[in-house]
Amino acid sequence: MKTVLVVDDSNFMRRIIKNYLARYDFGVVGEADNGRSGVERYKELNPDIVTMDVTMKVMNGIEATKQIMKISAAAKVLIVSSMGQELVVRDAIISGAKGFIVKPFQEEQFVEALKKL
Image 1 (tube, rainbow, N blue to C red):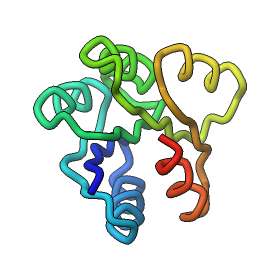
Image 2: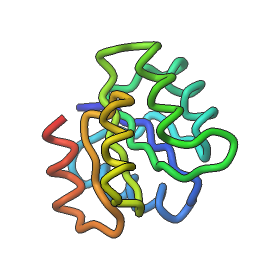
Image 3: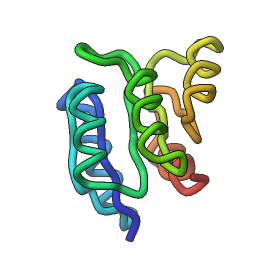
């Protein structure tokens, strides 16, 4: 079972993602509501995958992804954001994200993006 850290400032979105993950044999090992907490939780938990929102207070998802990649270049971060602009996608990939999915998404799209990691 792959372990997942869910980082999103929306409690509602974290709950949706955790429900999807539970149905597809992914184990949620933790969650965070901002990028800084996400980086700290990554250090503590060392999950196989991180789902990362982009727009969050304290530290955004792009910066958090950069920090996580400094901790482990092998980290697998899936950016999950409502911001689908080309520039955001480019910044996410340059920062080290291994995938990107735009909200709103279908459950199957989300799980397929995770499996590609």
